Image (tube, rainbow, N blue to C red):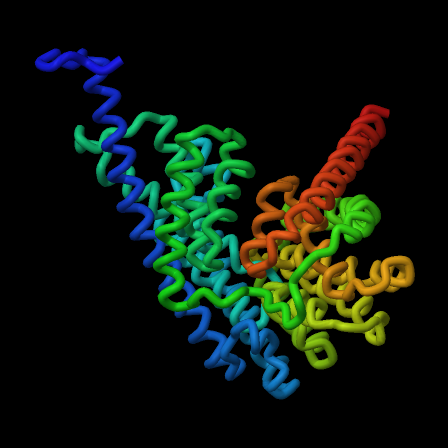
Length: 438
């Protein structure tokens, strides 16, 4: 009911209005700042790739194949060695590096160390390191949000409740992702589904506004080209629901294994001065593997894109070897002391799983292209490994610029893969607990 003319607002109503404007102003300011940061990170990555590999990355040029094998080897070794030294230096003394989940719990991210960590991740990927680049802009977004909140905490007109501060941190992480991948819906879902685990009008609105603005700014550098390009007709037949029924659970198991493996590698990764040795060895392993499989370099885009361009199954054994190589290099990069994301590596592994499954399914589903099976595998394994079905579904849909007909296929695939992975992971935890008790 609206107030009558001349009626004075109560103190609670004034406080509510003040909180609304504080949240709105902060949302817009942070969106602009994080969008600009995403632009700078994208430009930094481009510079590193050109300098080390003479590689201008795009959906048309997704792998540094044109670089000579020796250049790929040198780039991988030098890049990993430098990254290892920087990571050792910023971890060795002083305040510890705080992750996104720690920041959401109230821990403070040290700005300089976080900035160096973010830049080192992008540098490592740009020189060929086999980890995802998506963690860096998310961490940058959260760090910038924390700095902003600290600087404005004494300004009464920008006062934020603890709940709104946490919301803005999560939304900033999503905006960082959106600014690099030009994927605002995915950025919003990352904040709401993965970090906050709470969907409301406020959480969705704030996250979506921030991700949209950041994506628009990021597009000044990246444009609106798809991240994964499909050169064939993008329509998905309903017969692919059958494929989703089969690929979903299988990719769910592989996704659960990937989640466990990458989690173990991060938990027990090399520390201290061991990074002086382990990171150059990781670079050597990546460079030697890239001598044969240049698609293993980088965050997984090359592996996934190459799988999505396949129109037949002639390279089946090649892709099995490539998938294993990509998994091994990502695992070793994390175990050797590296920091990076696992979203795009998971998409790459899922694309390979789907492509392999197409060999067995295509005889029963004639007229379906192998790349469509690969996409189903990619979205299913991503959903399982992250335990975020909505984010996975819209991430692959959004960054690939897919036809709307893909959504119903993806929905079934991510539901089955996420459920299968959850059942398996719960079973594994129970078995591990019983073993520990005995």
